[in-house]
Image 1: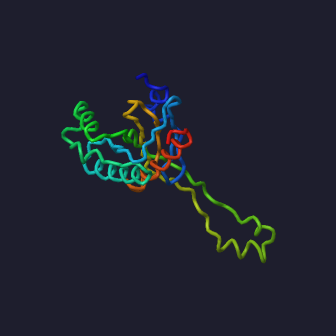
Image 2: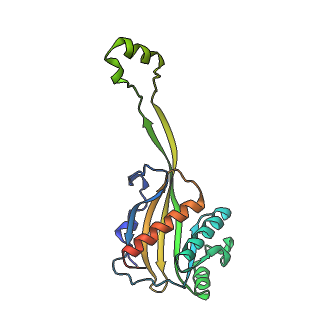
Image 3: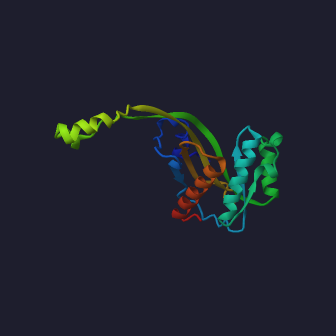
Length: 206
């Protein structure tokens, strides 16, 4: 399958726009224009979180499976049917997913970590009090406090989210999201699942 232009642009994370908020939000998405509706209600959908950290894989896939189930399909965490030591065996993974009757997958992977810096400028105000010295600036000036500017640093995690239809063997949705700062696996996965569902519905694929 020829990769869409969007997938070829996933690597240069530095080119993506920064998200100035404390939540998870997609900064770039793509949906297959010729994909058939997924019709996943009641179907099994495997949740895959690609990482070498077993604990993170389990917690992320559990959260993903719950979100998939809450949206009408039957979410299955991949670690429950495909152990860590065998997960890189593609033929085994394909056979296992087919054996369990998976209709598709929601796959996520961390593709970038960076630090976002923001500067809050100094504050100097009180203009209304400058008009007169007595009954104005004198009383205010002694109590006014100068607030110097300061620099803050926040961790930013970029996550790639992909939705595949196994029936069509086709990529249906792709997106890059940023979490600033990452709060928890459950919260991040929940926000991503909600955004993915919304975009798939808008595209008429759900």
